[in-house]
Length: 115
Image 1: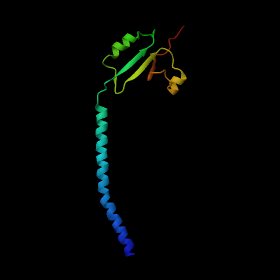
Image 2 (image 1 turned 135 degrees about the vertical axis):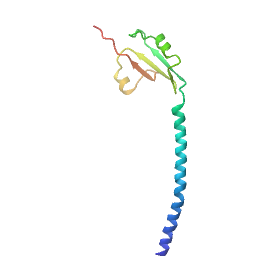
Image 3 (image 1 turned 180 degrees about the horizontal axis):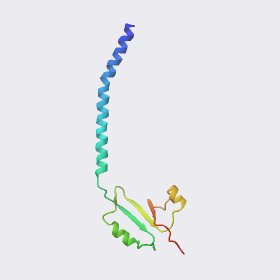
Image 4 (image 1 turned 90 degrees about the vertical axis):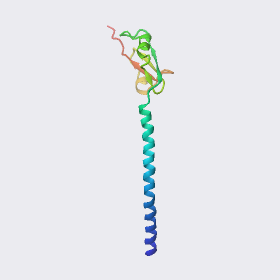
């Protein structure tokens, strides 16, 4: 029994010696991740957003008016292209995200009621 007890005591001592090292390592990792996250959140967006506007949209929406409104204000952390359409989105576009080539986001202003 004394031999088993001494092995157990040795293991407990080793374990207790390792706990502060693990705590310090996790604290250091938390600091590094926190600094990285803070940097990502506080950085200013600098990439442009490209707009593709269909012809004949209602409410005075045109390529020129969208470009004028977005100039210097529509920025992102990553560049992307947004298409503005008048029609209702198709199911594959709405549900599955199947968009035309080169388009990342599609915005529908709704279909005009004809009548």
